[in-house]
Length: 220
Ligand code: CA
Image 1 (cartoon, rainbow, N blue to C red):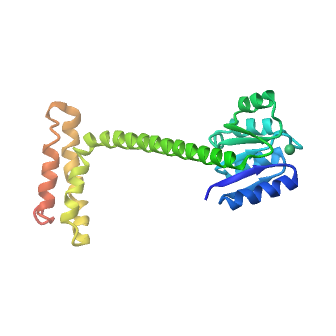
Image 2 (image 1 turned 90 degrees about the vertical axis):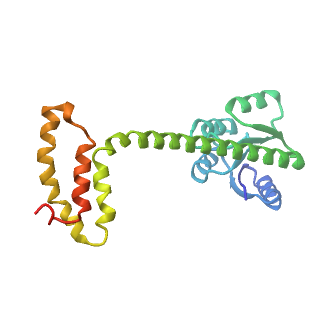
Image 3 (image 1 turned 180 degrees about the horizontal axis):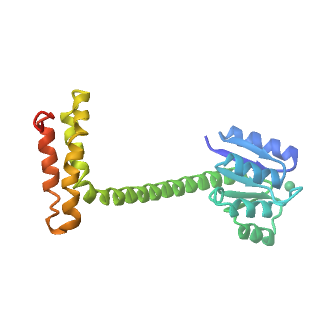
């Protein structure tokens, strides 16, 4: 159920409009001033705002500007509902950032069509942004997955290989400790002294053989 924020300072109109919108199936929040409207948009993130222009504190134009200036609420469609039918009022409203403009008295069929139209557009836009964000995260994940691969080729693999073999008990994991002190002292030395002999494939193989035998007995 779409949630609408109805901004209207005249109580009779507010109740009349609210009931009409609710009968149509919308969930309706109401605000009776510009500041209350901006606060409700920020706190409740309605799916669409129906904005009056003549309001007691900040007027509808200013309220629209504030909603549109906030990145968290800028995408929420705003349809102005006003008795200000002049082209100047309309231009100012569109300049402030509203999506559509309907004059009072309200033609409900037209307004309902516009509400559904803007709700659909906002939904499509939100879906597009979500897909864009998902694609960005996928690309980022793939990029980070590619980087560790070369490093993992030399050291993590020996650690991973023994794990399944040593799975039956704690003993095999304990046996991992003794071999490590044994091999590193021999391996790092050639690393620094003779980079050319640092053939990565050799070191992992030796570790694997030790773990395959699954015991310190071999070494002892
Ligand atoms: Ca008003």
